[in-house]
Length: 229
Image (cartoon, rainbow, N blue to C red; front, top):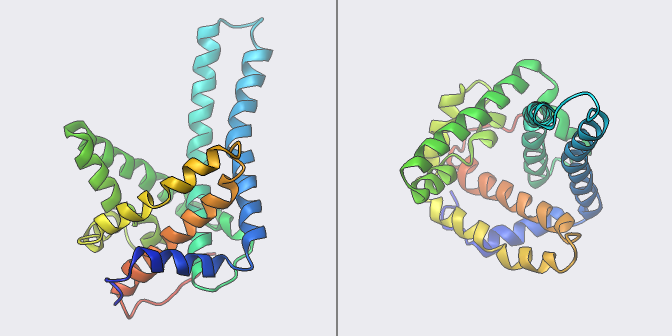
């Protein structure tokens, strides 16, 4: 068990996992940016530009909002699939880009992940209603839920959330500092007109996957590595 592993070591291992894979992960970041931002912008432009002659602005904006929410829900498993891609990369499985679609291979899995995302969001929101800090703490405590569901698809949503909270005991501060350690790079990326994020996002995603693989997954030495789909 490597509970005392330093953040610097997590980041070093992350860079090692990315070695020889930068082209693929930068392409993945670019594709995700196109899907997420271009899709929402396209819907907004098409509806607001094409239906002005037929409907009031209020109706148009309502329709746009509903469609955007629907798109966001449909894309939830994709974002989780991206996290699973980096976990597979960290484990040396050399995943193809198509692995990000693994969450869609089974309809029940996709629905389960959507429900898990919504439920986790509700839990964090309710804690945030008390105070911001408890919400942040709980958000960190639940942060391993989707990795756990990847390794334990037999878990229910509540079991995965509870397991994440349990295994993050004593590790929340380390996870917070890990995320905090990328702020400097994030600021520097602003001076690249955002282009630098194509490299930074994979670095952060790999570091989070490494955190799970070294500190959460390794708490169960008898857990086998299962591939989805």
